[in-house]
Image (cartoon, rainbow, N blue to C red):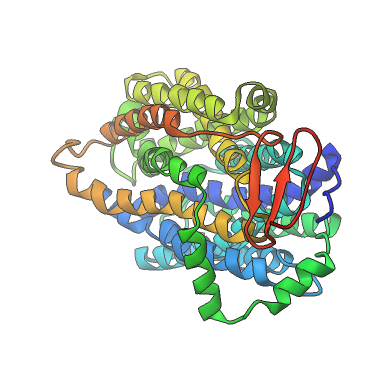
Length: 458
């Protein structure tokens, strides 16, 4: 197997620009779906159920698409067909969402939108491992994290920017959805498609070696074999992936709590309302967009700033510190009654968001066999969606009894869980590239970095 050539910084940026559009779409969902559901008449306690589309589609789609992309041979490459199909469907979903006339229509469109995002997302993770040598994995994944921060910054901030340039924040359409939200979704539809097309155009996939291509074509096709490959990958799951499972349970349960209830919490804490039809609730939505844009901008800057710290101290240490800062920030939010002071906890949340979107993948990537990168990235994302599914079906059970029906207490719960995630990182052992010895299962080869590269059949 030939060594992968190093890529320049700007080549890595071009490769990951498509991630900007994907994350713009996710940012619109995080900032706007709970308010949209409330505008359409949803009950607070039932909000988690209406967010079910994301984790379920991630659970079903990402491992399947990962395994399929590992096995795909086409004139456009292994991953590119999935980028394009997902981006087109995502754009269509974004165009339709703000025109939903009913709650069930909005919830149904979210299923389509999340499926499309997941079709694009998982092969994009594998694309980094495909293109970059192990020594550049940190830069590659943290560049994706930077575009996560940038895309979501603009997604959160777009409604406020539209108000600042003259749009009426109180103007609504026939479904009571603010026109600034409608315009933000239309902008997101364009960004989603154009950014993915840019990356496809500027960064073609590397062709497979004759040996790898022959092995791939000799592999049985069909959905049964794809499912069997997923089952085999789960059975052979690297130890590092298992160790990260508890961390991801805490951190993603917490983040889902935050996204679902932060607007409702701000509406009560700063504007004294829970009425979705009130100007105060719309102001809370705009404020959430502004502070969300701020923490995502912090994530954009931090993604690059964290690279030398991750190299020096290890991504596992950096991740634990960032989670601890975010947990402290979320615990403080319900006690803040001045909007500008919310920027202080947003710094910690931004650092954690940059780390969440980059460092776990850096920790994982060095333990994966290259011929199974796609399927393992898909399985790893199950560790995101399963905590979300658990949150969806458990939080409504104790929202009124344990949390007093108060969204501020949901934000406190999220902070406590992020602190737990930080301490759970102590269970994770990280082997840096350059020091590990990895058995590559498909080819029976051993790679030893650090004093050169040696490969040979067992």
